[in-house]
Length: 396
Image 1: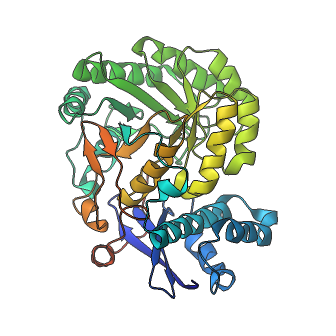
Image 2: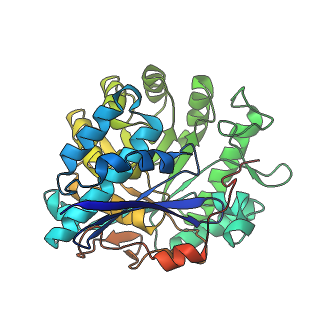
């Protein structure tokens, strides 16, 4: 079997775009993967195309050898965009090999430890605050709407939700100075108005969900060490499943972790075992977040094995399309130290059309597919029917 072609496809996803890689072979077997250019990954498609001369004519089933070669030719700049491009190729190659064998990807990886995967509703309220028109979803305008959304989470069977910081001191908006040139940037401080806002927000969610639903909060890169710790201590009374914090300093994360009783999750922006190593050695996190599209599933499993040595659980970073959900489900099914899996529930109306098979989700849990490869493919007609938009993922 030989690789005969690579093609990148892109679809409108409302407030951003979804990006897919298609690898074709001379035996008619097609491999699919998902990557992302909407937030910090602009140019991944171009990097993938630069790999084309290296990949054409190769046997796609030898994915470890191919990936080692791609790293070798880009060794001096192997992170960032290059890692995301390599991850996309790796994932498509695993899809091809599993389809050639007629088995799911997880069977190639040792078989499932679990066939039922607990999910949390990610960006709960976030898209409704920031992009209700683009996503064609109900807007959130006040704390009463948050209470109602908490009840909606329960009514749809989910047992956990993750939210961001909302401000209602004017037009409803996200507090995300770490990602946007808004008024608060670049100080990144946890002022009293911000701590009060998250306190009221969590009170409203808890009133809506009741005491049994787990709540997670993602603080992203929106504070410095002092602010992260102040926010974590503000949220301690709400019995969070975790607080998610992004920091380029593993020692600072360890300091924050020691200063709060909330479990700390981090790592969604890290690349490969080498990036995670210092964070694990410094005991910087309780849960290691791993982006399977960015890292590739084979590398993601190696990161999870490294985390297992340090008694750290892992959770996939998954806020993309259904294809990524399938990919992340294969990862979640085979790692022993899995915690919980992320999924977006608020989506554009054509979201389900972009793949040939939807994931089976019931009562907030995903059930493994027994289909070959990932268990689904990209519906190219639907992708073409919703062409990508430019300048997506705006915060201000």
